[in-house]
Length: 239
Image 1 (cartoon, rainbow, N blue to C red):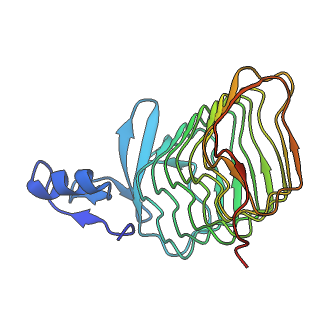
Image 2 (spheres, one colour):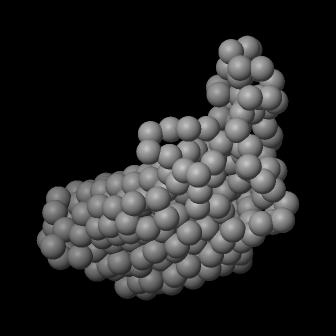
C-alpha cells in the first residue's frame, strides 16, 4: 500500500526495501518534529513521512530549516491534511499526496518538479495553478481528481504526460506555449474546449492524446506539426 512506511535501522535491508518500494523509511535517529519525520538535504529539509493527525497544513519549516522537498508518499492517504502552500519546496516526489484529503494547493515559483501520481485521487481538490518554474509534471500527477474544475499550466512544461488529468472535471484548458508533446493525458475527463497557442512550436499529438468523448472545440494552429493516427477521436462517456 502506498501509505505504508518502514521503521528500522539505517543501513539494513529494511531501508533498502523501503527505498526500492518508494515508501518512507524512518529510524530511531530520523529527526522528528511534531510527528513530521524529515532529513536534511541541500538548502533545507525533506519531509519523509507525516504521522501528525492534528495539523491541516503542510509545515513550511522543520528543525529551523525550510522544507524544500516532499518525499515519496510522505502524505499518502493522509485523512487530516487540507492545505499545501509550497513556499520553498522545489520537488514534490511521486505519490506525495496520493489519496489524501488535500483541498487547497498554492504552488510558488520555486516549485520545479511534480512527480508521478503526486496528487492522484485527491478528490477534494478543485483547482490547481502550475507555476512557470515547474518543468516536469509527472505521469498521472492529477488523475482521479474528480472535482478538479480549474487548471492553469505554466509556460515551462513541454510534455503533458499520460494520465495527468484522467477523470478531471474541468471543461476548458489552454496548453502552455512551451508545449512540445501531448500524450494520453485526459482519459475520461470532461474537457469540451482545448486550445493550443499559436506561438507554440513543433507540437506533436501522440496516439490517444485527444480521444475525448466530450470535446466540442479543438484549436490546432500551424505549430502542430505531427498528429499521430489515433490522436483525435472519442471514447464512451464515463457516466
